[in-house]
Image (cartoon, rainbow, N blue to C red; front, side, top):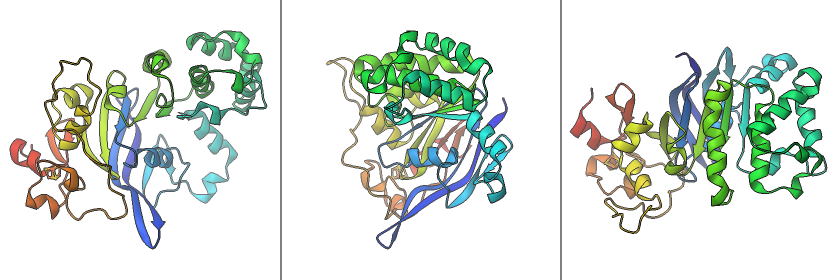
Length: 323
Ligand code: SF4
């Protein structure tokens, strides 16, 4: 499998009241072609800022992102090339949490979709492609003559998926795509997103604050906390053998499927601290039930547990060792 995204020492800092908020702090990872890569963490962990840097929507403070042949942040010269910008927009699409933000409420859905198809130069104005995609998301073609304010959140998110797929992108980023939807329609949208990789042969990154949402969709998952990677591994490994205390706490905070199900580990308590004063040692120190003195003084490195499983925790280093 080739690499489609290479993220190298990526950082995004924001000045806040004379201090520095480290939303993303020196992240390095790769996404393989045709995989679904999950990024999970509580609100404030930096996952959406990471996504925006990768989509070239936000300029990073340091580091770079390589997508195919394109290196971001792009040079001034590249930014001024309409052909390169159009090619990037065609290849990288995004589905946001709020689908209404992608549609002009004064424009019919049909007009919005045909405008997108025309921008990317689809044959016949993109009619066949749009019809094919409406069928894929199970929407009747009558939706084309309607306006966004007359449609439900679930219908609008299906249309946001249609819009993202119109130019046949190589990569789709889904940023909390179901968190604003009723529970009753979340599963339908997740099924549609889950089938996209195989149906359209694309690569996806799926951002969520809930591990349960990504469990059945992703191939690998990166757990983020305060702008840094805590654990990365294949989905079976992360759910079957979670090693970082933060990953275990996220798993514990999942809604229980039965009242008899016992809580076997500690629940995640309190809010994520601000990313302005990152602790000197482990970022999870203030909330970690397993912390020892070393944790407050020395930041843990990313330890390799298996070829594909990495964990940033001193205890894991001591119990599993650095393979
Ligand atoms: Fe907890 Fe220490 Fe591991 Fe950090 S390094 S997660 S504080 S045990």
